[in-house]
Amino acid sequence: MSTATHNLSDYTPGEVPSGSGRRFALVISEWNKEITEILAEGAYDTLISFGVDPGNIFTQWVPGSFELPLGAQFILEHEPVDAVILLGCIIQGETRHFDFICQGVTQGTMEVGLKFSKPVVFGILTTLTMKQAKDRAGGKHGNKGVEAAVTALKMVSLKEKSQKHKK
Ligand code: DLZ
Image 1 (tube, rainbow, N blue to C red):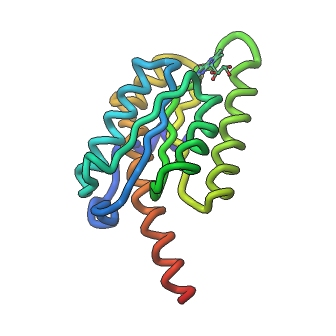
Image 2 (cartoon, helix red, strand yellow; image 1 turned 120 degrees about the vertical axis):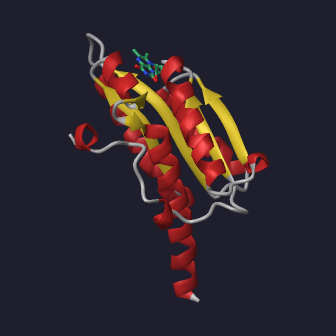
């Protein structure tokens, strides 16, 4: 798996565009809050370190990961944000609930991004155990929240560049 060999907090700072003047939303799942709080901290701190004004970062909690895409949609309908970062942690249990939540949130994330033509970033851990989640939320494999924020900054810049090409 890519995250076993790739630290989620590793990036080349020079390749990350500035977030100055940009507006972002973090939509965070309350399920497995001990993990999602760390993902949110990683995403928030990374956005700040690339020049995003704290006043331009909106935070919205939703009950579980399944609700993340709809949370993104509510924000995109009413707030002029450049990108939304979804942060969640789905841990496999004894039933197939895991599969259905993963499937729903993955499909929903893609659909809401395409619907609004704005980056909606998948910062969601889907792990077999709590230990694997901790390893990816500030543990030995880094923090997926950091990776998600870097992706959001890159995609916002990419959208701006592609719009300039059209003119
Ligand atoms: C129900 C459920 C279960 C079993 N596991 C998780 C999980 O590991 N991570 C997570 O974010 N949410 C979980 N949920 C809650 C669902 O995402 C959703 O909130 C409920 O099914 C209500 O729609």
